Image 1: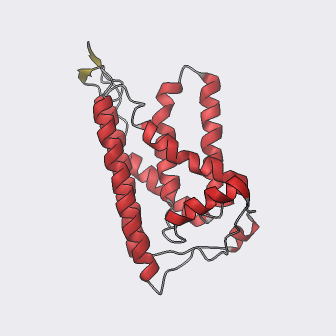
Image 2 (image 1 turned 90 degrees about the vertical axis):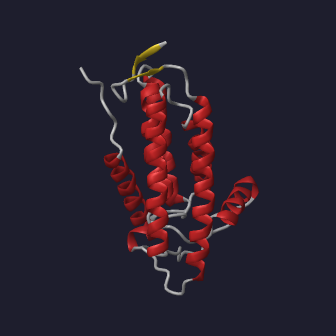
Length: 215
């Protein structure tokens, strides 16, 4: 069956492009692992890594339980590549993700940043999650927040699937907002990191805009 895509205005197959979705998921995941690890090592080797921590950040409490929504993005992110019914929409999302990643990696290399706060270590399962997170996410690569940039793109990607489900749509808005808040309440990022991360996300959307149907 062939129909016009709501995203591209061109004729394309309506078969779900799950094979290509797997490829993009693996490619973007590999890019993240390699890029983040390399720039983390680079920042750790610098003696002039800077912090964007301000007095406003001192008023933000540490809420250990918010590690759960924070880490949930790691599960939602790969699933998002399967949210598209048309290959052009999938490729546009993949292009956005790769662009945001490369932009943040470039910023990490040019402006190494460090977390200046002593990070608490909770007990129990929550503490174990923090330990696992910090084993990979060293206190570097904070500015801009790749977590915030990715969240914006993932949030937008799921909206077309939720247009007819009002309750699910509002639940999705609420959960994404909680993920965004968790980036600062876990003390993984400062406010300036989040602001610039969202700016990267919006810039990526401007570079790869959604295409409307041609009438």
